[in-house]
Every structure is written in structure tokens, then in C-alpha cells.
Length: 258
Image 1: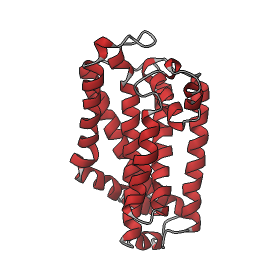
Image 2: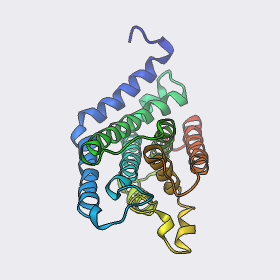
Image 3: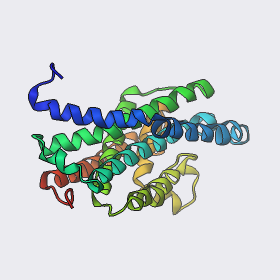
């Protein structure tokens, strides 16, 4: 802490606390999602891969890896931050944090970084396992880095927003189960939307997770069902909107002390 500027010590302490929370429960926060997503690779990829034609010239067990990594990282970033801010509100210790000499954006960022760390650990772990099983490449590293940054920003902030509005633990869990997970499955994780008939192909274009999956897939494999510039643009607009929403809630203090 001595090397940290005095005005940033609160941010560093809060971010350290949130990161330690993730690492202390690593079997639940990191190992469990890696294991469950790895089973998808084994069941859908290795077991069925020989029976499914290559998509865009890419073996099926390789094609599904970017989508599975996306889905796992999305859930990790969202779930961590939603539960963290909800617990802070429910147990009232958010009041102590808000009364500390920290700016609203510092409190927001400090809490958000816990979900970012968890998401990155899950993604890195799943990628490492996929290298052993399918040898998935990284063809566009700059696009992949941008996609990852948008992913953790979008769903880390979404978790904060939902956690602030949630009235019970079940509320933020319901958003994950009813909205995020179905949209991920329908976002082209296991298939190319070009194989879908009309109007399902067109409807996929309004699925926000579809565009995120495409940016991640382009980063890994160099292929996408839509121009990657469009997918990145849509994801960036959504990310900026949700990040601004989260920042507004902290700047006004609305519902944080409710």
C-alpha cells in the first residue's frame, strides 16, 4: 500500500477485497464453470464432432470453443458482481464503503474488478483446457482482446445494475437463468446462424449475445456470421450504455442504501 497514491488506496483495497473473495472460493467461482464448460466440449465436440460437418471449414469441436468460452465468461462476470453488490446492500456494509473517502466511480470500479478477475480466470482456464483437447487457434489477437474487454465491461456492469435493483437473491439469479443463459445458447454457440431458416436467422441479429459470440469467434478462428466491425460496434454500444447506467446509479446513490 505504501507505493499506492493516498487518493487511490481505497480503490486498491476494495478491488483487493473483491479479488480475494473470488480466489478464496475458487472451487465454486473458477473451477466449477471451467469443469461444466469442458464437459460441453467433450459431449458436443468430441462425441458428436465426427457426425457433424465442418462449419466454415473448421472442425465442429474447434468451432464451438469460442462460444463456450464466451458463455462461461459472461456468466462469471455477471454472477460475481450481481451477488457481490446485492450482498453488500443486503448486509448493509455498502454504507461503510460509500462513506469512505472514495469517489463513486472508484467504488463502482473496485466492485466490478472482482467480476472481471473471475471472468478472466474462467476464460483462461477453459482456453488452456481447450488447447489440450482441440488445439483451438487465436488468429486475430487484437480483435479477441477487444472482445474480451467489451465482454467483462458489459456483463460486469450489468451484474452491478441488476444487483442494485434486485429485491432478493432470486431476482438476479432469475436474470441469469431466464435471459442471459437462453440468449447465449441462441447466440450461435453451437451452430452457425447461417444454417437457420428465416425468420430465425434475422431474429438472431437482435440477440446481443449473438454479436458478442461472433466477435469472440472471429478473434479465435477468424470467421464470423456477420462482419466483425458490425458485431464489435453493436457490442461496444451496449457496453457503453450499461457502463453509463452503472456509473449513474453510483453517482446518484440511488437504491444503494435502500
